[in-house]
Amino acid sequence: MSRPSLRVQLTALYAGLVLAVAVPMLLLVGFLFGRGQDRLRAGDAVPPPDTGAQQVDAALAVTAAVVAALSVVAAWWLAGRFLRPLRAMTVTATEISATNLNRRLGLRGPDDELTRLARTLDDLFARLDSAFAAQRHFVANASHELRTPLAGQRAVLQVALADPGATADGLRAVCEEALDLGVRQERLIDALLVLAEGQRGLEHRQPVDLAGITREVLLSRPTRLTVEASLDPAPVSGDPDLLASMIGNLVDNALLHNIPGGSVTIATGPDGLSIGNTGPAVRADDLDRLFQPFQRLSPQRTHTAGGHGLGLAIVRAVAEAHGADLSAVPRPGGGLTVTARFP
Image (cartoon, rainbow, N blue to C red):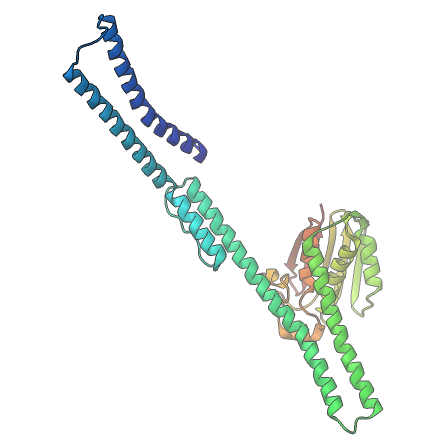
């Protein structure tokens, strides 16, 4: 037998409280009215004073009033006792949202609606705490990535300005180095914008063929590695620019994080897209971290690739925006196979 809902329990509680107050009053009124009718039927037009009857009636009236007052007090006490956990949850939830998300309600008791509500709120606070922590981490990493080329530009220009014997060729080299650092900033900002667009979701959809996008991406990225492509038609509905960014980042990841003389395999079909590459060994425990912003396996990986650790994060964001199922599996000899299955 299922437990009645909280609304049913509250309705039954207040109905019982109302009856507890109303029934004694109705019984008293009915009793006194019946006594008056009996006297009228007995022919007592003007009944003689009956002190005993008056005392009984007064006692009954006082008893009914006391019972009614006690019923109101009991109803108030029961309602307060029943709603006390809810008030405590409200106060604690307000304090948590206003101060810090590390606290939890921690309501203990029977497995009823209030306890389940408290557990749901605790899970919500935990997710919010994790989201805010990830946001702070993302902002800190983005600030660091943006500050590094800015600091490099400033140092290069200051050194050039402080050199009284700087030649035209030297100044030209300094300008080229500053421009390279500016290009790095542009790439990072573009990647951040694509990531934000992917996480925001799709504003419009149109028919797109993943095979055509993949073919264009491969033509724009010449390489000495062995590339095996099987590009069957893969029609999907989505944003072509975001899908091109996703495929471009997957191809870049497969090409950059490879080994000399390695290979890349790419396949498209009705289910979506699959890209695999040879490369360093990747542990299964590190897969989820690779798809987080600014996460890399090692500093050496970043320096050789010249990336910012946003490529696979963009891939995940775009896949989620299109409702695609994204999975990554380490290859036995090293490297990854990333598969995106579209609905």
